[in-house]
Length: 342
Image (tube, rainbow, N blue to C red; front, side, top):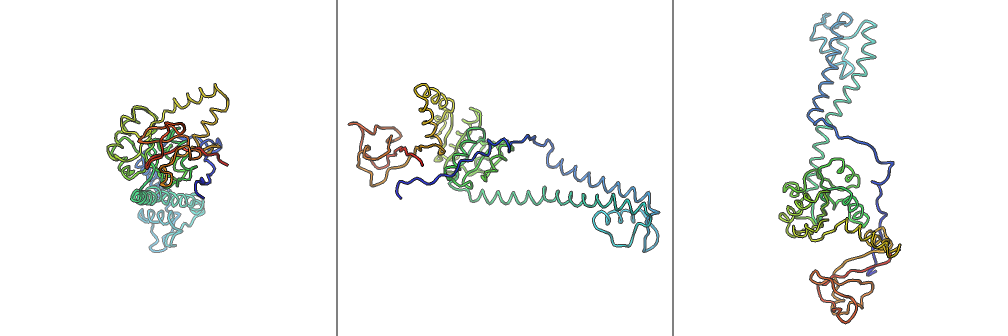
């Protein structure tokens, strides 16, 4: 039905649920250091088993030549640590068999798990993620970029998803891996890096993006991101939260401090004014403010003839919707409409 609003999904509240909030600390060791530690543990276990078998070499029997050399000990250790053995060298004393059963067998299991985990973490997982990210980057088009993932863009992401925008159309850029992990839980693509750098925005294909929401948490960073994005993508829509950002090229400027002040001031004139304004700002409210371009069938009509229209925008400037000075609707005008939600 024409004019009917799409049914909204229930807004996400994952980041507010205390049951899902846990303490975390980023590892201080680099991947190469972690890999070296794992290899050292594996070598240490092998050296320990080799030393024991060499000391207790009289407890081993070589069914081929009857002599146990140091090479035989190394061979027996590696076979025992990775498989169940071939039967050419076997432990013959009770002590040696107990050592193999109680020490070597757990080491074998841990050894294989550690090797498999290392291969997955440092080879398979990274190769897969690298290929997947390249595929996602290649197909990025008409997407929405969120530069920074603090409180403001956290709420912005929740609102975008609640409005029905697919998660695959959203990319979050931040330097903080913990923030990106929270964002990725919503199914969006994430990119770790400084959004003020050319290579970061180019990797996110800002030139093919539909919009860029800037909220890095610092005024100077916001301006740098806006300037960089405007240089790389002159036509992309940019929303920032500082007035100076408009001079840097932002299309929309939202000051969260000023907005909060307006809500506080409105509450003095009545307890429900602030609630109404807050409802307009979120898709979870009971009223919705929608902006759209006028249709061909509306051109030439009086603005007052359109139900629910509260503002007419022409050439970037607002006009009255009632009274003698209210203009007739022209092609390319935009209108703001208020709807009651179910």
